[in-house]
Length: 400
Image (cartoon, rainbow, N blue to C red; front, side, top):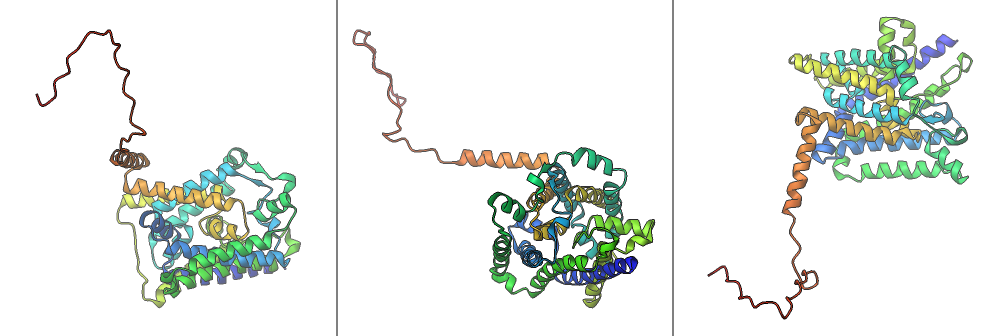
């Protein structure tokens, strides 16, 4: 029964992944592309779509919690302590790696489904680095060094906003927080007229939000309680890629996992969308420089993603739907890391970026108009010479 339950979870993950990969590939939605558009071009449309996905996921997930169908304390995102240093460092490293590759782990799976062989290398390196950090040679450093610097919640309160507000106020505000947060995010996205004219983007955002809720529900209802504690999970693509690589290389029994199923499902769904649009193309690295950049970025995403507890989907949508305290820290760190990575690629280095910014600020300060001299702020004249001072002739004018 235990094996049947595990394989049922894997099948559910496969179906969820297929739908997610299909709609995201159809809309050409990319988390790094959304961040790049917002930071570099001032275009927030794709970022709003991820906000829509988070809003829907937040409303649906918290509805499950309120209905008693989901226990937030069993989730990995709501532990009794918040490893701030690990999340901060990991999120920045993940953002830098995302910029080097040009997409995140989820986007690499989507690209792989269209025939991009560069993404195959990225997935292998990302998965290896993730598993080494999760359970391999780097796990000791992660646990004993980085995760030691954690903020412990009072009296064992879990690290989510609703539990923390209930502890300090004595009032359960979960429904109010979910309704306000989810509603505002959905309104911000749907309030953009340009987005309302792009049904593919809207469909991708709705799909990601709904599938996040389906993932929470499936891993709660289909899990075998006799096999051990039930740990609900949903969409995330760092540790799951590591487990998929490990299962393929060393232990096929690990394929019976919801997260591993989503990994293969995303590739299959992306393939179906590309095949339907006749966009299947084999692609490879242009040169060794591009390959080195992708390998370095994949390693940074694998290591940083485990430190921060997820990717742009895992932290940006899944953790956010659980009201986890790690969500805003991880998202801000990933955006900062992405900007640093873009600076390395475009400006040559972060130092060059800072120098340009400093020069721009200095030039702006020099161009600022000086305040006009008025009677109120005119400096006072020096005191007159005493009356017994010797007589001096007036100085000549410059014209003379």
